[in-house]
Length: 331
Image (cartoon, rainbow, N blue to C red; front, side):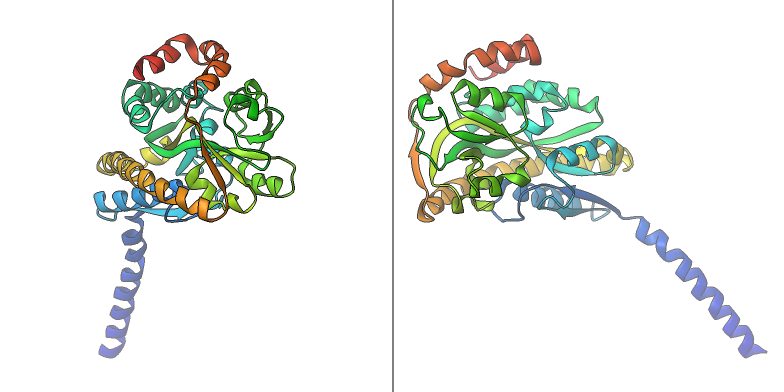
């Protein structure tokens, strides 16, 4: 009898222990973070993703874990952004031009030759310009955790180096599916071909397009140097890449966890910007060694004059106050 009693008691204790296990596991929250490029140690999206993961897990003492999904595992940027909006994707790092597809005010960051250098852009985005943009996006259930840095966008193609606006004329450039980039290359006389990122490498390789515009780090991580010859340092657009999170996912966290995640966004953004700047110099030298012909555009006055009508057009789509505010921030 005693033996049967002990066995029964043991079974009850074992069952109780087994039952309690899911409760311990569920105390840890897992958030998925996606981006479209590779998980390279020099890719600006990947650098930002890892910096955010490290900061979140440290600041929450492991109660919030970040799972990383590079290489379009959660979809192209537009799909991920919509997922963040509706709560089916927790977090993502998205190119500014794609964000502008659902909140046109973000087009301000893509206006050609607005920012002269990284410091100028960072000051604007960390200040009122960035705050106002984030407030507009929050109304669509997307929270901006940080304005990370993809570096300035450059022109690459297989036709000729770009030194003047006339060199863009007649060349077929892949552009993001965003009116600012379409208008930019149309204004410069090029043939703008809107195309999803996932189709671009093959399109260049097959000659469907002649080239594209892209930050240096992404040229390297996507191996575009294998299919394009000329790299012209036009610095035509500062590439902001937003670290965003679903409001629904954020609201599910405890107040302490939410505060930690917001702080992690700030810390990760600062770390990512620093790393991106250092990596770009090394990568540029590497691209030359890999066979790309590189030239620097020293004077962009002719380019600025050519695209000036875009600023007047932006006042109608983005709002005159926002355009003037951005221009004021770079004085």
